[in-house]
Length: 168
Image (tube, rainbow, N blue to C red; front, side, top):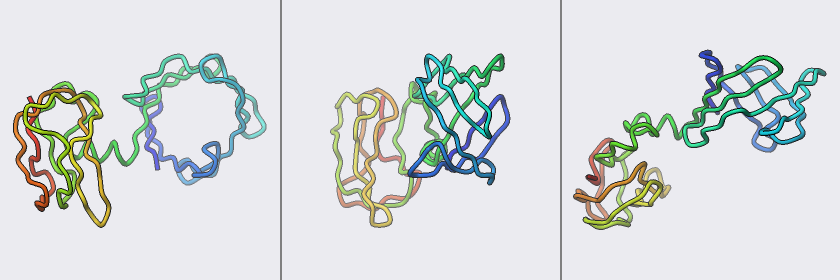
């Protein structure tokens, strides 16, 4: 499920897993037929009407896009479950620059620690493996920095929001 904000108005979108051109918007079914490239103009057929859609601006990391459909401009922002989880941890693309601590997103067991104190880390680097609800989750760095202190040990149980790794 996605949450889309289009020109300030929020929508819930449930794309079909097999075909992203089908699904539900606010509980109502949709089906699109599209050809072409978004940057140069896609021809989109919806409810027997044809639209030319051009992607004029794209920030994939922030999941923000500007679409031109005819003479109308649409500012689109997308969020999924992972974005909500990161926001709940106090992390986001904008907060990555001022990264201080990595906190546990949920209670779990530390299966492996993949960094050491003093290591320089980049955005997206795997930091540790946390087992929760019989699933292993790789916790990745949302920004750059140096590992200042590791507050956990392999095999240790942790609570939600517990500071696992301090970054500076």
